[in-house]
Length: 199
Image 1 (tube, rainbow, N blue to C red):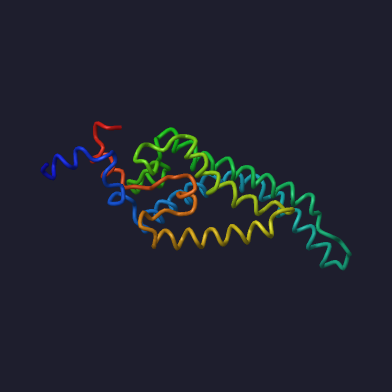
Image 2 (cartoon, helix red, strand yellow):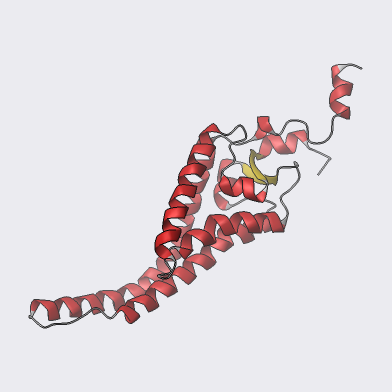
């Protein structure tokens, strides 16, 4: 059996590792997504910033006047919750809804020519994308919930450090959320070229 026929008879897919995106490309895609997230969050900041600034100015005026005042934590917590919920929705749209609609591509991944696929070589299913985005988006936001913030923040920091190390050292450049959701990030042009007519 010659090499060409041997390759034809190999179980699909044959060469995922050669298509996996390198750390630099993935970091660049994440930066683009962060910029998009920041831009989309600006309107919320414009809406709530004046109220927070006014409250803090009044508080500082009272303090400078020698009055004994305490911060209204309920007032601040309300805005913190609003920011968290808004950020959660925006992040899930960017990291879950858009990839589901585009078969594994965030805006950043589109810009860098990357795609999220399953580790079996097919388009990542909505369930795998959901697991991946939940670990990537929801877990970090939970650290801002006062009851569980401290210990969760420590765990998340460790996970992010491990993920960053994996990004450079893992053979397939899989981070923690990639491994848990059984996904890969690949160069889309290589993926489409190799699997043309199969997906």
